[in-house]
Length: 136
Image (cartoon, rainbow, N blue to C red; front, side, top):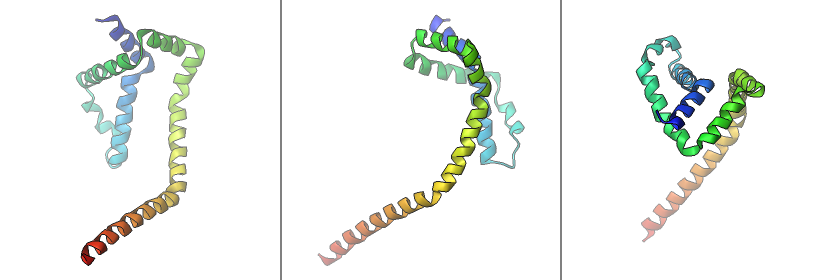
């Protein structure tokens, strides 16, 4: 095994990357189909599927980071601060998600106004084009 590949694999293990993606995928499926419990999806995530995911992700990291970058990230996440970040990151992300949902709901009316304005402009433009075609 290539040392760079092994370094990324070590980073994934430290970050619990594959497991986190699996868990996130289950959460997404559960949000799409709330009547189906997340445990129903678990059997789909076989070792072969998760190994395949890892093999698909490693080249992305190798393309965007040097081995030294990854080793530095490993050093950071093995530090006290890095360990704390790993420990609380799920809570932080969950809180960010909840705040984001609230924020999006607050902005919903403004977003709808922007969409309405855009659609009205498009509609008016199309009507003008049709009007000028009919006149000719």
